[in-house]
Length: 303
Image 1 (tube, one colour):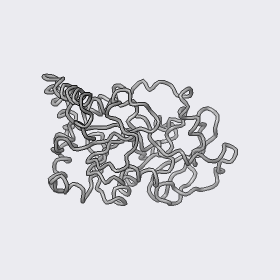
Image 2 (cartoon, one colour):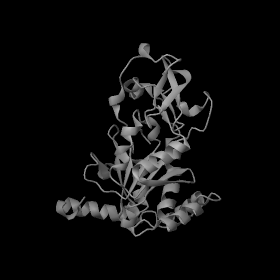
Image 3 (cartoon, rainbow, N blue to C red):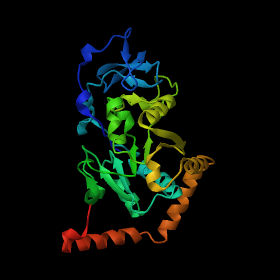
Image 4 (cartoon, rainbow, N blue to C red):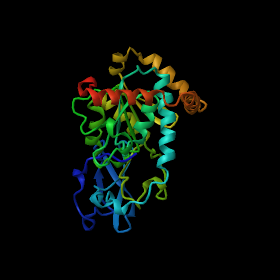
């Protein structure tokens, strides 16, 4: 998924990089972050990386190169985007099915890029909308949002987004301030990898913050959520918010623990996919009819 982030942190210049003997302030928890390594970003900027002694996260120095990093001409093709979207569709549909998300519950794919994930999830009957400030949702234009103001989704997804946040303490507010019952995310966790870790992706310059498991737990606690790691998905569960859906913490914990075992999440996702293929156009036909009614009477469809 395309990275959704706040670009206001793009200050400084390469020649002003903090020296390797200095420490920095962690942009997530505010703790002391000590020099870890220096890497060449975008093949031209010598960038310091820092390891936080508080939350255990890894981060670049304040990223001043993001305008260049997100210049389309500077980005190679994301060759894994299609397969990754299919994988996430299988896992997320399995998760939402098993927790019995009510039909029609609003879901937002934050940083949804071209909208392919939103389209695939709508094809399976989930009420998804795509939000991305910097990409055109080619596959889900009718179901894209230009703002999240006044939205009250029950589910927010944020796939391959969090590592793009230059100021995670502030940027994470965008996900949690809507108080969804569930936030479902993916990002590779930092657990002590060395400087050859491919996820640093210094060639693109877009990955600037790398969360530890401890950091994720801290994020959950800060916003009043609890954390579950389920089959490759990071799931933040709203302690109070799940009550809106008639769900209890004990029941959800049992469900998520079951899905986390023996590749159960993907197995259930594949079973749902086979079932869906028996009537693959069921929900598409409903949307076609809704679009027809809207063209006749624009007041017939409410957002």
